[in-house]
Length: 235
Image 1 (cartoon, rainbow, N blue to C red):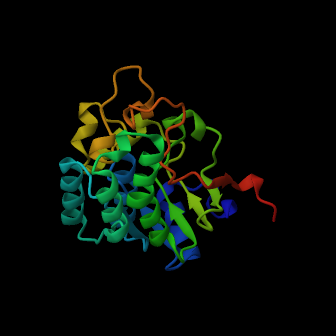
Image 2: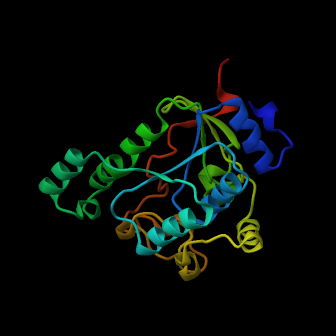
């Protein structure tokens, strides 16, 4: 697949891949800076890629505002995937609404119900998953490629702005007057569920604001944990 998009800018690459995988390409947004850039690329150029989000039920008010504003501006649907209600109800009934603070196991259970299972449904049957991942966001992403194979979800992944810097992202947003989450202006580089996300201090790691109460070096929720580099595939 890499040869299809080598040397192409993100918009052209998305157009090529949409033609290559008609009806089988989706983009996941959480309405952060990077995702707003890619959403603009898709909607402003009428690229036939389904845009979806994971509605965990614990998002910030600012996130809902950007979600609604984005739909108003582009007049395009953003498909919401919710947790399976009986799984969520059973967890909260047993452990309460904030059990994720109590242990890593509980936090992963909550992520699994609110994010991972809905993601599997959103990706099911598709051939390609577009994401807003950038290489500089965390050390464990620097060795990734902009095209990968996700064995857990059985599809390719493409990160169209993988090599962009944060300054590149901000400049693109300003140039095209794209709505963005104002929490970014308050020190939130990464924005997820409200109880699990905080602002970071100058000099702190990009993901220090996620699950800050946990003492671990690698803080990923599992959305991208199944990916392996295309170079590792045995074809």
